[in-house]
Length: 173
Image 1: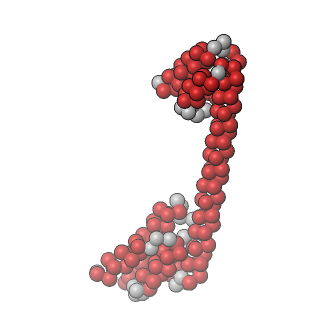
Image 2: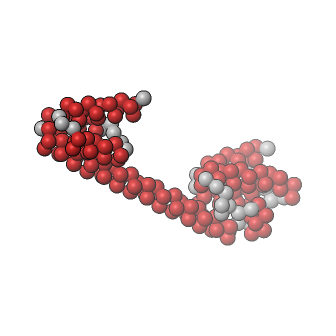
Image 3: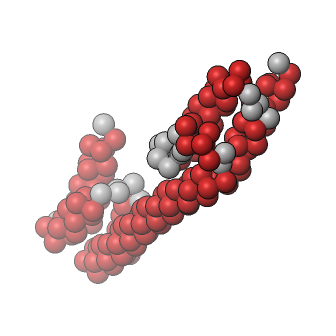
């Protein structure tokens, strides 16, 4: 029984598909007999669960029967390739999200600079400074657009700051 506990511990320690599947094959090979099939199935189920946890799905993980037939060398390569594809997709997705967030931040910063500059031209630098502090708490582009419109509509810096403060208060409720 001690060997079986050690096998499951070693399997748990495998952190990536590059080590998980070869570890599963190695541990399964330690229990080659027909009487050990249930334990090999349990190891396979455990490894599949680890794979799903790491990859977010079971795609690419070989079935127990496939591993039993090939005894692994080819299946390990197939599983590693599947993991690499999944990993590349996840990284590409994360990269795209990062670019989108960066563009959004850049657009927002540009919008805040433009609004601040326009407020300074119409109402003076004191209004610009106070407005800049308020704009930090506005995240939506539509809110920034609204503030830009208000610069044209308002007759004073105080009126503009009052509207922006009211907008912020509404967003916090």
